[in-house]
Length: 292
Image (cartoon, rainbow, N blue to C red; front, side):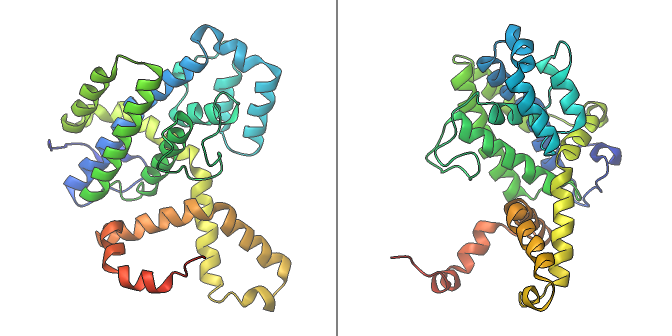
């Protein structure tokens, strides 16, 4: 792994890790995601909406209604909305979060096997399923924004997963260019990172984190709830309406929040989830009730 020399401002509002190697892993994943993943998803977007028809598609009444609802529901930001609703929108200016959101929410693609609202099955290798996986990877990256670091096992897993997804997506929408993409991915894994990269990535990093602001706010609410509700019996002791809202909040945002908290805990202890689960295998097997 090449050395990294980069200023603390690179990671925006995050604090730098004391481990240069873990910082290097984080920055490499970020650069691969912002550059190569965005480029690949843009190719998929333009494949399903030819560039010359982008403005026509986005200006249609059906698309405008869907995009307005996405803004109202805070799925996209005002800045993203302005890019989409511009007089002559340029898809090359869309960030990866916006591209994925448009592909998922505008009926351009058939839903994955388990639907848009569920984590895709391992056997589902469709473009729709891979878009959901990319969204999960984005959330995983955001989960590490406070320390701007990834331990080696996490980096290797994320890199392998991201590489597999990008190659599949590219093969579907740009056949014949897989070798070029593979070479680019190899380059990003080993290239030197220095202060010159800061101006290129810092703004995009802030945009990526801003687009996930709702996740952070949700996490803070749930963490506050956990402190107050040590026992579920509080649901019955206090005003039911108040705690029913808390419960709904936990379930509606539960997967993303718990995923972030789990990754944070593992990262702080330098542990790998697979190793932890394997070491507790006997406990887990005895605790799980098998369905008939």
